[in-house]
Image 1 (tube, rainbow, N blue to C red):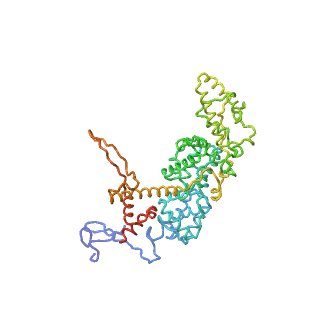
Image 2 (tube, rainbow, N blue to C red; image 1 turned 135 degrees about the horizontal axis):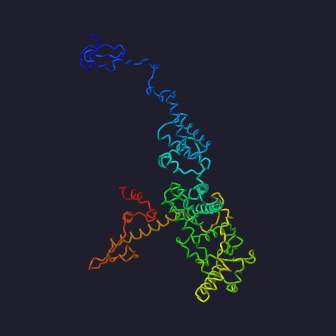
Image 3 (cartoon, one colour; image 1 turned 45 degrees about the vertical axis):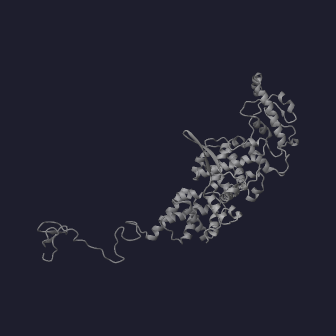
Length: 528
């Protein structure tokens, strides 16, 4: 008892072991002493280890060490990502082998490893020329496209790979067949839309709309256009852009550029001056049919190229250009004077006699269009013949539907870029960046001219009219209660001040027109 520890409650040394439990009990106060019978398991490195104490185990009953656990978790990350991307077992194996080669079979943990797996998945699909959007991979991994792009560059550089270019035609085919917006469309219509879309996509490649741009917004624009062309009205740009995970604003810009170029193509038609961006969809069938004809034409300089030999549907062309709704009819007697252009049969359609010998030029087509339109206007304005017109419409309906899309052009099939550039589709367009650069160049020339006028007017007030007068602003009438005064608005911004500064420092106008203001300021203004 003298050598026993003191009680934690009463501080007396009256502590004895209990015969049953073995716990130490104070005989003075009866309090059981805590943690005095703890037996530490000290046996060195090979001793007994408790749960979650030894590094590398995941609980009682497991035999995994740290490396095995790390590999297990890494492979699970790979499998989960491959399942979300819908990869087959063979593609998943390729991704695992690529990750294993890059990490020397060490794999890894953390966010960087998920980005690495996503980059390897993207590289594998690009090597196989399969469409896989980097935006989709980035969203699944949980990073932005720039971080994933840097990782893709490091993977390609480490493995010394050469990725093929992005195939926008394959991408368009993939999304039109797998998009939920077209899930209820029949296979025949999908095949028709696919040929039309491939034709338009390759036309946009020829017109440099895809040059230096992200390809998916162009795909969205063409998907929406062919949907509207085939009267699938429930498809919108916002829906398709959300499915492809791209910005709807960019898709609208590409869609507008597509319409603008189709309007330029329509200028070659006899009624092309009436075609605008707002009504291009009404004339889209004519424009695309004309483009298809031009792409199949062997001699594009022959202005009297046969419409029939090129596959141009002249029946439907004249039908639609004469119709504004279904308000017109045509009697057999009305066509007697125009028999030199066409004849009417009793099958409710126009037929051409000797199609192989039927040659028609745009000028002749414009004459037919104007003559028949005037005749139809006279018929429409005569009230006494309204009933007869309705009766004749039942027997001779010239507005019967004709399948205007042939799909016989090589542009409806996947071609090489060299072949696309050599095709003639009715328009030779320059890259949008080149056009905007020319406009900016002309704008800077006007600003230089205006700056020279302001400098001359300031330095020589009495001789301000010696050079051409330049309109610097507009006069606005401002109402201020009872008084009316004229206020002069001058549009002068920072660019004008920079140009004035450079001109005062004797910088050549040719150098200023290029627009490298910062470099010119460093060389001629601040380099003193």
